[in-house]
Image (cartoon, rainbow, N blue to C red; front, side, top):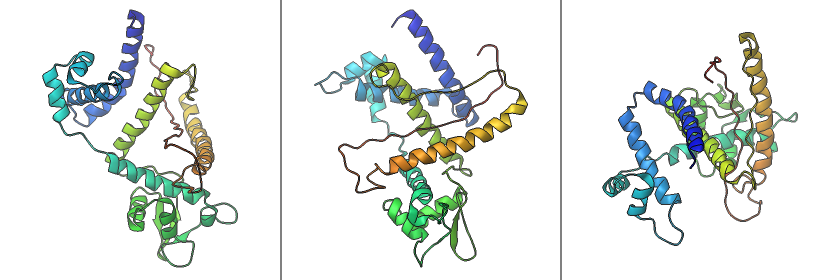
Length: 274
């Protein structure tokens, strides 16, 4: 790597890590703990993605690539890995139920709005919605989760009302931190792909930003962004659902892939060093 490229990469990593370190310090995560996490991931990525084709990943090669001793590589490999698969699956299935409630004609009114659904009884019901669109998750588990995050309310007649068009955990800090790992990971993977293959197969990556906006303009822009972004996401969701074999079992094709689009809003005071 050239010195210029190294300087650019160092500056980029500093920008990425600054807000992350702010979160870590706010939650009492020390540098030593962060260093252990980074060390473990260096070993995992080197083993999984930087081996020599046709050869089994080796401790010696991982040691050379990462700069860690062979002893340290072996120690790291023996440590248990954090597992968030269950949390991610819960997030995906709860979001899938809300999405289906907004697009599946069975659960919509004549004017295209999500119906108020009885928990059980005369169709369509909330239980039917969950069975059809959440895989094998129990109805009660999905209902409890959507109630917990404020996406639905349950009235005195045991009917369920959708009050949010998105699954956005509001009450649990743990849930929000899990979203941090998922969403930021997707964004960085897209940037990495564009750095390596952007000329041949670019992935969409754009932003719009200005740096001399008055305070008074921000509330209106927040509202405009939320409204238009939600409309776009619901439109893309309808398209994707027709090609997803869990949501649309008659969809055909080979392989299994994850694809989507993420939109986020940002604002901060302008600083000269930026």
